[in-house]
Image 1 (spheres, helix red, strand yellow):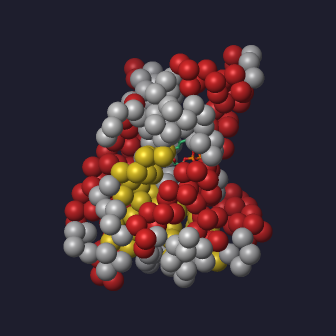
Image 2: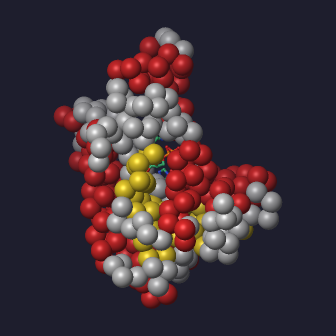
Length: 264
Ligand SMILES: NC(=O)c1ccc[n+]([C@@H]2O[C@H](COP(=O)([O-])OP(=O)(O)OC[C@H]3O[C@@H](n4cnc5c(N)ncnc54)[C@H](OP(=O)(O)O)[C@@H]3O)[C@@H](O)[C@H]2O)c1
């Protein structure tokens, strides 16, 4: 399917690996110019080189910025004045007791997961409205619905993101700018691989056993009963980037393998 994205420009936060990296690769293959992002110049350069090696003629650029540091976000928006597509992908989490989660951890997660989208949208949305075309996509999580008790702070940042996205879509009412949320379920990114490897080591079992028990004891509503690949999530993201998705606005698209349950 021709996604009609050639020569458009995208910025993807937190995209040196995982879902962001896979999305960058797909958008580059569509002929887009893509800015990827991470916290260190070593990581960003490595990811840019990998994308250039994997996609012939890739128009990919790297921007170093740590979303915990508002000054670096300001510098980022000074460097990239406008984009056609903004993908708010960066996300961090802590898995621990509510009682042990410090104010610093709450603040860091809100800063990185939520305020990153606020700051970037404040900068790019008006420019999209001025030219009457644009896409803003927020990467949420099944945790916004499931609210695991060891991830309440993370879940709260993702739930807040849904209100932000809907509000921005309403600002864009009557234009060709759309703002939507993607809800990934458990996805085999580098972060998830580390989580499984650590847990397997800790419990003295194989990674496969950890994965199986995760779906039989924690993500019990999952219909997929396995981790999605990053590409399975990116397929949905690139559809929302495309002009073909023009009637989907202020909406939520789940790629959670059914884990959040129910019919809404
Ligand atoms: N994987 C899952 O199971 C899953 C499920 C539901 C939702 N999600 C959501 O999907 C999104 C992507 O997750 P993922 O699992 O693909 O991520 P990941 O593999 O953990 O990738 C992390 C990326 O974020 C960057 N990053 C981390 N902290 C950053 C910061 N403060 N500033 C800038 N960049 C930062 C890292 O770059 P450097 O290390 O190079 O700095 C790296 O590129 C997140 O919003 C996550 O909450 C993931």
